[in-house]
Amino acid sequence: MNTRITSLFGIDYPIIQAGMIWCSGWQLAAAVSNAGGLGLLGAGSMTPEVLEEQIRKCKAATNKPFGVNIPLLYSQVEKQFEILFREGINIVFTSAGNPAIWTPLLKQHGLTVVHVIASVKSALKCEQYGVDAIVAEGFEAGGHNGKEETTTFALVPLIRKTTPLPLIAAGGIATGRGMLAAMALGADGVQVGSRFAASEESSAHPAFKQKIVDSGDGDTFVALKKVVPVRLIRNSFFHQVRQMEESGASAEKLTELLGKGRAKNGMFEGNTEEGELEIGQVAALIDRIQPAGEIVREIMEEYTLIRKTLP
Amino acid sequence: MNTRITSLFGIDYPIIQAGMIWCSGWQLAAAVSNAGGLGLLGAGSMTPEVLEEQIRKCKAATNKPFGVNIPLLYSQVEKQFEILFREGINIVFTSAGNPAIWTPLLKQHGLTVVHVIASVKSALKCEQYGVDAIVAEGFEAGGHNGKEETTTFALVPLIRKTTPLPLIAAGGIATGRGMLAAMALGADGVQVGSRFAASEESSAHPAFKQKIVDSGDGDTFVALKKVVPVRLIRNSFFHQVRQMEESGASAEKLTELLGKGRAKNGMFEGNTEEGELEIGQVAALIDRIQPAGEIVREIMEEYTLIRKTLP
Image 1 (cartoon, helix red, strand yellow):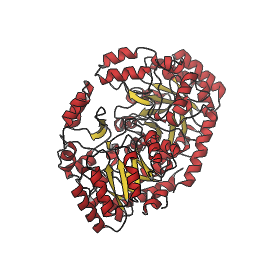
Image 2 (tube, rainbow over the protein chains, first blue to last red; image 1 turned 90 degrees about the vertical axis):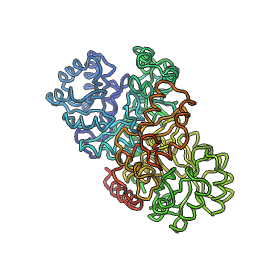
Image 3 (cartoon, rainbow over the protein chains, first blue to last red; image 1 turned 60 degrees about the horizontal axis):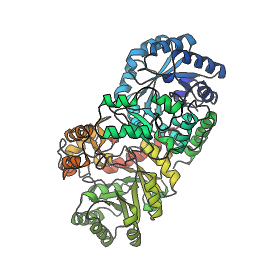
Image 4 (cartoon, each protein chain N blue to C red; image 1 turned 180 degrees about the vertical axis):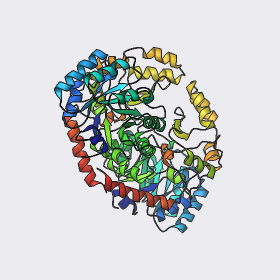
């Protein structure tokens, strides 16, 4: 398949595996890249030392292109960029922050820069600061979420209308049907998170993977809107947050409840009741844990099949 | 075009015009039906007498099939059904309620019954009580909204997987791209609301239509979750609600603020600051007021064009 996204990265299929905290280590990224998609390491849950080690292991496991996702709000972001430069990484996805600050430096070092956005306003900033491609992520996506709550169905055509930049749709996409719908809405490729979070090669705790598989309709929700909106599985922790929110708790009180290390505790250590379990609505469609390469192949097969049967 | 939805209703294109309160009178419904889609009268804002008059005018204005949308929670629902029987209406869309109570009676009278749902649980109820087709409406839709907040992108394939019933996707669909994406996700047809609310034949106040055209990304929001979730344009009324909600106001206090007739005041009488303006996220994509028949034709043209260019 040929789209502006396959050309930009030199890959076979326009399927990007999201660089998710606590899920996206070298085993997952290498498996997706080896299957013809683009694997991403999720640096948001890695110290600079761990990131360096993960990059080296990923290089040893694949000769195909792969990239790194770096959330710009994290404290050690400058050290992480230095590692990318030193290791000769040439694809970076930045998220959770303003592309104005870091994009010029990343471009100076010759990297292809993709930025994750959830609004028209942010898409225009990407264009202004020289970002190479955009991930437009809808309200249904897991983890951090835009304040506008614009869904993938509304967001993708809006961003397509706003800017000519190559466009990757994210949020709600786990299957070939989802990929085909995203392309119909104007995307050049897709970013898939939840289904890869539940893959065999994901570094998530097995108990979290099982929670994804067990999730049904209505089992995820966006919480902590006064702090930073995040889509979570409804567990004990979620219900505590919800109760406080409904009685009008302040951002400070909510931040105090959140504390430190909740996502690690839930997603990596497997505390599925008290941890923060970041996952997308599309978890409801995911019903088994599979090898990541098989997921890439199934998405492409379903895409081709459904494309033929469209009325 | 041939799908299970065109066959079910005997129409040319699987495009349903939503039966929206204060927007969907006989002029709009007849225009859409005459253009080859399915027009619906929105009985939710009509007394039984007004509904009877609207049906008669609609019959005079088109020889094509049209239907009526009846929200089941409204107080005069039984009288409205009697009018449908007396007038020989044979397509009814029911919404905002439980299909168990009325479907058997409607089927006894030979009507084709379509029910609007926003969750897997409600889809299963539709199947159980003999509903003929389902509208699956995502979180991006205007007006009343499901508590699960499942978006069109996540909901449509979930419902497709849940039941073999003919499936109409709703929420976020205003263009040929949107229709194509909905079909890719597994729908047999689409229901379009916001774009028709802003059409020439819509009975909405011109000031409300202009608000739809002027709306951009992030300008609608779901409010009143403690009462009944509803997607609105962010205006003075919305901000009052928002402020009360953030400080933990009860359902009673919110219902008191809402009062009576807010939707009529905003959508029909044109009080765009103090009224309740129900519209979908996709308002951000709508940039002009057009004849409804032209909208049907543009959607079909774009559908055919984009379908050909899919990679």
